[in-house]
Image 1 (spheres, rainbow, N blue to C red):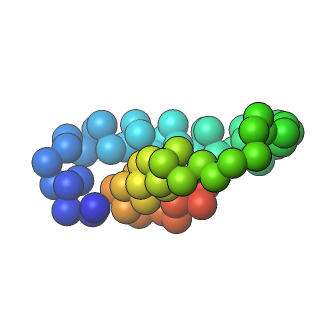
Image 2: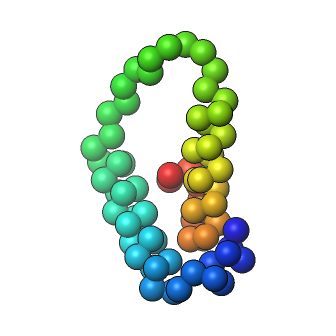
Image 3: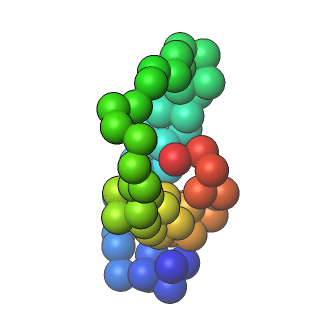
Length: 67
């Protein structure tokens, strides 16, 4: 995933990193979990979110757990 950063302008990656840090910081302070609707498996939803988190984590050089 870090290889794809080669094709994205440095300024864009920097702005994405800044937004990621602001998002992570505000989520640590203000996050309140809420119950989910339904009780089934959310395999597709979890796979898409995990894939996006992994891609962004690899692009920015941070762990995907923050996303």
